[in-house]
Length: 343
Image 1 (cartoon, rainbow, N blue to C red):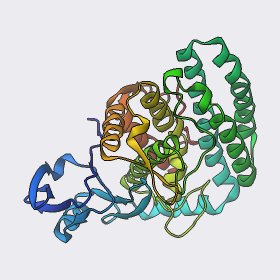
Image 2 (image 1 turned 90 degrees about the vertical axis):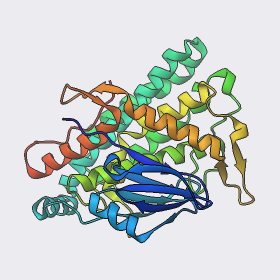
Image 3 (image 1 turned 90 degrees about the horizontal axis):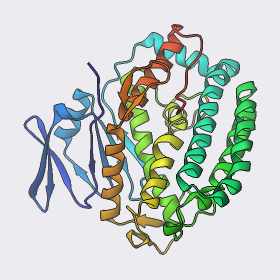
């Protein structure tokens, strides 16, 4: 039996969610527009001004359905999570490893190395898809530099040094984005990564996809009994899901960046679907947000052969499997954490 993630995204401003028997009823202007059985859901993500009834919160907590509240930028604000099924021994080991800098670095460097390898794969596939010698010659130095960063990350024994390598690799990687955007979509220019808030449509799209990924990573950590707040690369900070942020690193290029580039290059999103607020923040309109959510969910239904398990699984299940492999590493069943590397 394989478990698949099912998430309900609610994006209509002013919507109200209530418990209707054993289902979620989505009401807009007091009219029920959608009804989804609870047993079909693993997560519920609410964007902006969405109301939720206390009985529905209680039902979701009891059923293990995580409710994530994010703002209209896609930035995570809060989560409603029920009693954790995790066993205390696993969590105690997680805390011990997080407090041991060498042990924490051993796990974190595999995650960062996988992220850099996956960034490199995104660039390699981009120049293959572009089939343009000019794009290839422009991006090839970055691909070479990422190969060097990958080797440096694998040898790293310090978390601070590892963060430096990861930051440098990210600058090189994102520096290629304007080049690998298809000529028909060059209006989507990318200068640098901006997050709080995103200052251009490209960054707005990336931030939104990263928020979806963070929700899935947090749910995966909780579902296997790990504490999503205690990470190895991302250290403790009140309100920050450090382990979820760790876990999503290896998936950012594969699941979010690659999808953002596809949406832009295939003209599935357009500049007209974004607007700039008085503060300079760039937001998506409802139609664009829904198109991105549909594409994200569809991508999670694709199948891929897991590089470690050597089994075909859905892309949406990958994060769950990596969380379980991480739990096995902490229990001592594995000698090292096998981070996900896209091949």
